[in-house]
Image 1 (cartoon, rainbow, N blue to C red):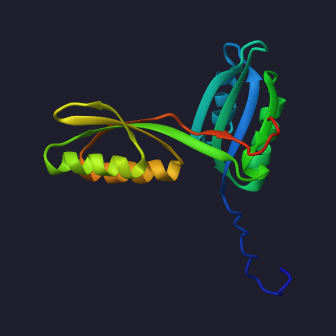
Image 2 (image 1 turned 180 degrees about the vertical axis):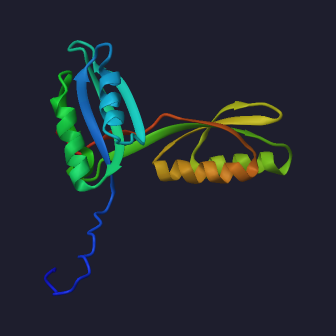
Length: 180
């Protein structure tokens, strides 16, 4: 019996699932991204966003920004397993560091005529989107912002005549003068 002297089992404790942004510094060599993504898929973790680019050509280092979700225990396990991979130099949880700056770039193609066309231009101006291409029947807009801002823009453009979207995934950096 449990502490309350009842035959009913104790309630199951449900831990909250939180979104975390991880910055990972790795060697810039073939197969590194496959090893990291393989670690995630092999253990059943999901990658919500992934961006990769070489950041220090002289030292052959790349920075991988990964957005994932999990309980605190799962996030700790992900960071520990990433740290153990040979090409990984450093893993930093930008979510725990404080208010990191996160941005995403999105290209949005919208088709429409008449009022839909002018409404698309008004919304793009309101969101600060840049017009990259304009034809008599369509526009391609570029928008940089938070994931939430881009989601809102895409939802509004869906009503007007959204044709296609392309998103980069999140790039993130900690605030302040200290390097990663």
